[in-house]
Length: 196
Image (cartoon, rainbow, N blue to C red; front, side, top):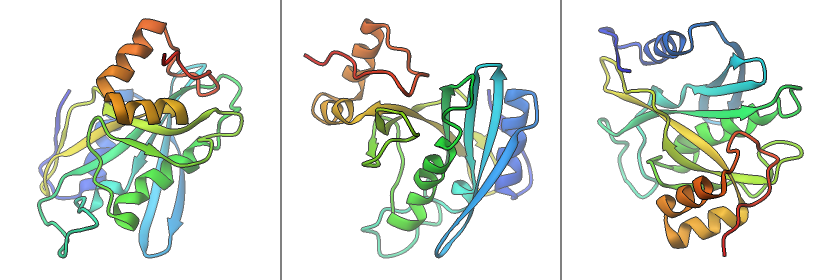
């Protein structure tokens, strides 16, 4: 799916694309970080027991590596998506971790790309063994805006052991191991996959 919006309002274009993809309006929350414009998190419910959280605000500025001396005007733009199974809303605070991830490009100079891992050093939600994410393609096509394309990247929850193993073996190897083991990747309370 690819959505084209002629104006330069990046966030409006991204939100319109997300609404078109999920076909319904979201619940929303907002959080502010020092020196960063507020990050919104939209919560969609594709089914009764699933929640999809998406950031809205990260794409307002192009991502620029921390080592760069000047902010890139044509750097990549992206938003993050986090998909979990949560019929009882036990993990409703996961949106706060997503907002931290979404603020990282502005705060720390992180440039998200598929295959990279991010370890937050704490559970992504209360009761979760996952402490970070593997960034993958979400399957939602790029959102075309007047200021450049915006990628919607999926943040796939992973345990600390999986993230460490992934850094050595690579993201394809971890995804293969998840697939071979029949891992329920929407379950943030799941155990670490067999890594032997």
